[in-house]
Amino acid sequence: MYHSTDPRAALAAASVGTKPAATRFAGAEYAKFYQTPPAENRHGARTWYARGQNFIIVYSDADNGAVLSRTSQPDEYVVLLPDPGAGAEIVWGNERVVVGGHSISFVPAGASSVTLKGARPRWCV
Image 1 (cartoon, rainbow, N blue to C red):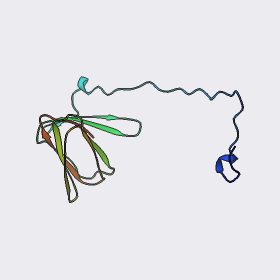
Image 2 (image 1 turned 90 degrees about the vertical axis):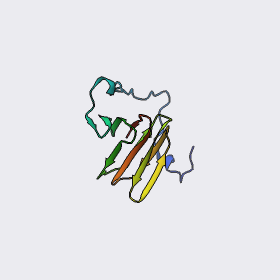
Image 3 (image 1 turned 120 degrees about the vertical axis):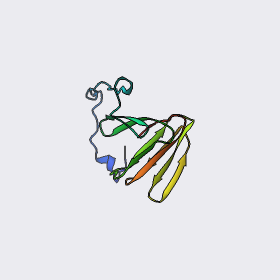
């Protein structure tokens, strides 16, 4: 089926009528932040944390003007602003970017801060 120089030509052919092995998936898990008190309540932001398989999600319900900073962030992170009327100013190194609500931004590793703008924004990192 493949040319002899194509690496796929070396693959073993599947037997006709063979069914793939069944795979089981774990049930979904949910972090219901509205059912638990925030892990942090400071600087105008109420913040919850949850762990996924290969990530941490941080959810904050913050007041206008709240500053959320990271001094030694080892990895990039995402700022998700789900409310259309609530934006943010993101500062990383010498860069300063203002983003509108209903947006997603990727912030590189290192020191950074997010200043929330607008009426009572919610955001996720």
